[in-house]
Length: 297
Image (cartoon, rainbow, N blue to C red):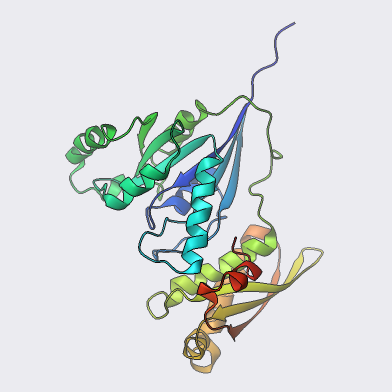
């Protein structure tokens, strides 16, 4: 009688400084959009878990917020705490940097990784390197900074190198039965994902006008067959911000809600009724009690 085939499963943290492409990589690896993306730092504020199941393998990716080295309010302290906890509790760390760039912030994040942890260096945005001849010397340079298990160049936006990254990461997964069902994509609820998709549209449309003092709270989430009724509040820090979010004649808020609803319908595979309004809650980014009530831990 032949021995049963081994199965490998483990947790992998995707870590790096803000805007390096962590959420784009997570979405690319699992093949669906579950982590929101914009060009603004601090877009990802929560740990997002994405699940990819292949024959004999299951990857449980943890997309961490970009480690905040310059901002010290309560929101950023909570985000940094989440990054540190994620790095301790995983089997493999995928440390993302940009091709041709390894700066002091990257070094500080590398120093946070617990000793003995398996680390794969993921060099993203190789498509943006104007002189491709620079890539090999750059790899040689960063290889001398740490004992990386593997170094894999990728372009998360196009998918270049992502198959090779999965194959490399699979070699370091522990033997374990799967932790999730074959069709599971994330451990996050639809309620949470709805809030994130709405927050993404805020960042994309208002990132140049508003500081980061805005978040989303889902006040009601009801499902009637394939229809989801979602009532959401956009939380801002100042009354002036409320006017910016609403826009002239309410047009800005309507456009934000419309964009978010389309993404929700695609992910949930069903119709969505989305009602959105704006609330002012001054000082919420520096109030740990308020942050916890809004789902930040």
